[in-house]
Image (cartoon, rainbow, N blue to C red; front, side):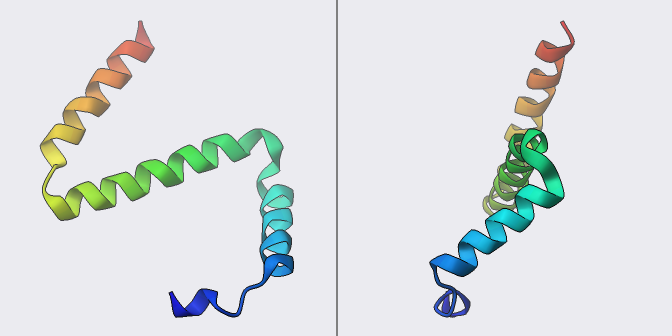
Amino acid sequence: MNFLRGIGPLEIFLIFVIIMVVFGVGKLPEVGQGLGRGIRLFKDSLSGKEEKLEDQETTKTSKSKK
């Protein structure tokens, strides 16, 4: 991760403040959850776990509808 070497604590704080302004405090958990889900999907697709993940997603959506 050579691109992160030039980023200091002040820059990270500034990026965090910009994200808070753009998305707002209420949307931040949803954005984090979506980002985590996207990263998980990407990792699982690389390792070939697509079918297992689809089963988990259908189970989650059926539980949330009840």
